[in-house]
Amino acid sequence: MLRRALRSRLPPGDLGRGTASGSGPDPAVGSAGVSRAQARFDGSDRQARGLLMAALQHGDVAVGDAAVVMQRQPGRAAALIGQLQGEGLVRVVDGRISLG
Figure 1 (cartoon, one colour):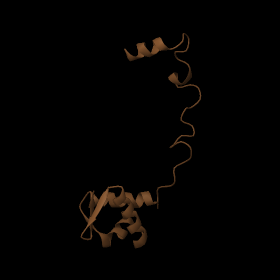
Figure 2: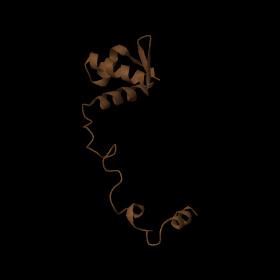
Figure 3: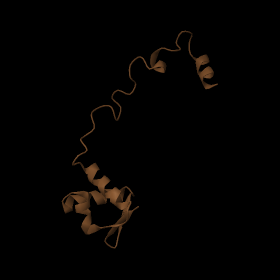
């Protein structure tokens, strides 16, 4: 039904050409996600955040243990926890980090 409706709006001979069939220029070139390669994951802040989030799925983590869990220096771990708090993903109460 939808295909028939769309077909009726195309000029004769246009069906099967251009982006509708997957040929022609890529409309996503230069858009987010394809403009450049993603940064490496190993050793990244994304990895550290992921390690903490994975640990929190099993229960709260003491603030003092977060740097070890995240494999970061305490100052960097604190900054990343602050980001996660700002995003509403975690909360810190009485020295314990839990899922937000």
